[in-house]
Image: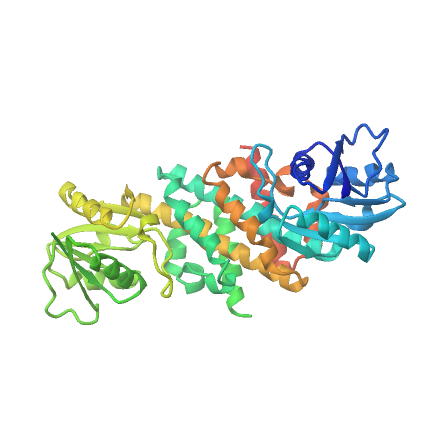
Amino acid sequence: MITVLVVGTGNVATHLYNAFFNIDNINVSQISSRNLKNIPNTDVTIIAVSDDAIAEVSSKINNPFVVHTSGSISMKNLQNSTRKGVFYMLQTFTKEKKVDFKKVPFCLEAEHKDDLKILKKLAKTLGNSIYTIDSNQRKALHVAAVFVNNFTNHLYKIGHDICLTHNVPFKVLHPLIQETSNKIMSLPPIKAQTGPAIRNDTKTIKNHLTLLEEQQQKIYKILTKSIQDSLNR
Amino acid sequence: MITVLVVGTGNVATHLYNAFFNIDNINVSQISSRNLKNIPNTDVTIIAVSDDAIAEVSSKINNPFVVHTSGSISMKNLQNSTRKGVFYMLQTFTKEKKVDFKKVPFCLEAEHKDDLKILKKLAKTLGNSIYTIDSNQRKALHVAAVFVNNFTNHLYKIGHDICLTHNVPFKVLHPLIQETSNKIMSLPPIKAQTGPAIRNDTKTIKNHLTLLEEQQQKIYKILTKSIQDSLNR
């Protein structure tokens, strides 16, 4: 039996609490970070609050082993005087949408080997993809995630805008979007690159630019240049 | 019975020929665009050659109805003196990989209504998603495809580079990439946007920039600005 306390009431905290609640060998409780009285003493205390609140919340907790769930905050940012660790799940959590934890990569870190073992044990009750990732690696992962998730979604948004402007249904692009994301499962992205930029098809590039608004043009140009530069390395 | 001639020997031509070959009511043949003697006379002639060659190849064909398969070339670019049309499939075709035509959107155009009907009939033998798209719409679609496919793949490549530099396995990001592309099936991309840019989390943005190379920084900045500008519209 592992006893777990989840501190926080946001998306990550609630999804995590609900998931642990269904596991036999885990005894989980949840409290709000605004009410830190009578804190249950547990084996693992998971602080799932906004990045800015982690230091303050952790400073008020005396439980033996405290971890946070942030991708961009260092383990040392925890201000508890007891043992520290990180329990980072690299996935976007949406309130309404059920999380399939089997597909979530768990990125774990701890000051002590035995604590890392506990975190692994805990993660294994929910998922299959478990990685030991230190604070520097996690920071890099977080930036990489911004590119492949946040920025990619913004490119979808630009595609959506172009379709709107020219009266084309965006759903025509759905299968291509799926195919593009599926390809990287079997092919490194550098080898999956296609399109006018990598072919250096200046005629098509010129034609495309005439169809775009100013900011779309800037983005088109810088990404085209970056694709072409990647060829010359 | 529809008789079809595929002109060309590249990826699109070969995938298309193989697909039609298995359809009962279609009689398909294939020729190289370099050998335009004894051209079989068919109901539909599909020119599947590189964009630059479309005008010249079509000028040498006297068959009654000639279409090309390009996303970026106008129907009027065809130089046959007979009827014209476009049979554009919006998907990336890779030589080694089998194409699931059921998932391919067919974007069709023709000068005459009856020809459009023939193209629809032809497309329906292979696929389910069939759209009537004129040359201007198709050009817009082609630019939008560059954003959601070619540029998105390049963002994956940058994510891959960051992982390499910081010694993190790229596959940790695979589930996030899948989730991001799945989201747009049910949510418009503007509503699916998450991350430091849209939260205006200047601290995280600053931290991220320190981890990036010069060109990655430029791309990070311009996409962050574009995300933030999209809020103010």
